[in-house]
Length: 76
Image (cartoon, rainbow, N blue to C red; front, top):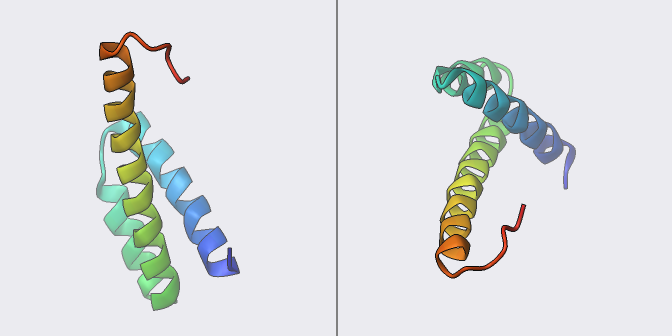
């Protein structure tokens, strides 16, 4: 990964941690705006990382549900 993507992904992971702890997703917009004021490239990479991480979470929840329905062991 590039430095930009590495930083964006780390910020996304930290954001997701806050989102899970608080249930509030306003931190995403706040951080995106702060990043955009200095680096549009980093802002775009951050938002991409957020979308990817959220999609991954949703996909893993679906797979976990389907594994359970199929009687397969948990993949945790």
